[in-house]
Amino acid sequence: MEGTAPADFGAGWVSEFGTRWLDSWNSHDPERLLELMADDVVYDDSAWPRTMRGRSDVREFLDAIWRAFPDLTFETVGSAHVSVDGPQAAFRWTARAAHRGRLDPPGLPATGKRVAFAGADFHEYHDGKVARLWTVFDARDLLVQLGVLPKSGSTAEKAVIGLHRLRFRLLRSRIDR
Image (cartoon, rainbow, N blue to C red):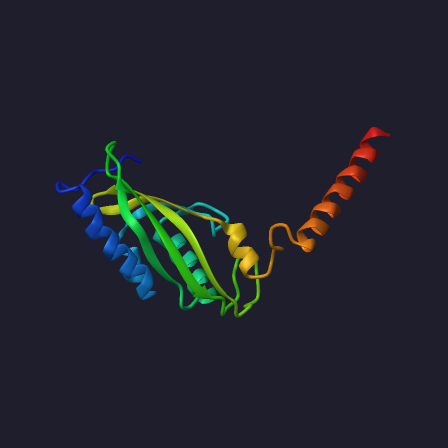
């Protein structure tokens, strides 16, 4: 999918679009956010198990995320990075929320824990809307904050790794027979 730049595409346009994008996410109004995306948007997000294609897929994602984190808010970090290769930009952000509802997938019940994490969005624009979107963040860090995974260097992490090594040795001994 090759993007088409708005006539005034540049740092100013991207900054204004970025403000509308962030405000739309923080409004929790799916229609407001979806309006900024092309009808055939392609969206990959670290929080979702599959590539979303089209607004209905994105709507399903938004419903799931906002159900799990009803107070999810984003703040941008620094300025947008505007590509010289075409109508593309990247934004760094931080997010904060409390886990108040079931997180699907994978079906994690609400923990009530507050989380804060950082990530980045990579946009490709077509006709002034996001046509291709990649969102990346440290999912492991989020899962540690939610208490799903053990903290790095903890006794619990060492125990999990020890169990994995034992499992590997057992599997390898079966293969060697």
